[in-house]
Length: 260
Image (cartoon, rainbow, N blue to C red):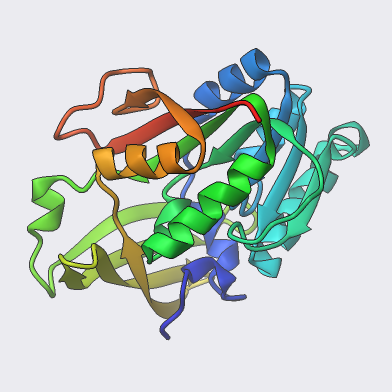
């Protein structure tokens, strides 16, 4: 199955939570507290970031294109209780075209969500929309993959089993095997094929998905932010505030929205 992004598939969406990831949460909680607490998360998925922020007392609006991921987010909010759920608004929408009619203190685009935008025009459109939803002086945290030489040099057909986890809802075991299909160096687009194996009650279910992923270089990303009305405040190579380096696994940019 070829898709624009894997989590819009009803069968794949529940698998997302098998791959627990919390490394970035302390950073986002710190930024939300420092910025004023009204947070917009674009590509909120199943509320991995959104629920902890709401638990910390912040008002959070989460936007996602996948109805299946938003359904999972609503389940988590119900489990968190009515006081937490009251701080959250969930919206189905495209981050390129959102129009919520309000402004926020902090916007978050986490865990490589930006890579689903595969053209420069889409990237510019999305960043302009984000800028429109931030108050002057508001902050954008943009988490990108750093296309290291090692990552770029993987040949077509190369395979790696990159994640392995357990679904918290059922205890099913999930493994993902990723195949690099192709890399267009001119367009900066890599096509990835992922095979998901779910083992539950002695049965194995497999699901295959193929999707394009656009990688962005450090100074290209800075230029995109500046064109969209941001001043680049910091460029980090991880979630602990460390300096960005050529071999950093993460390219994390903080952009401050300029005044009107």
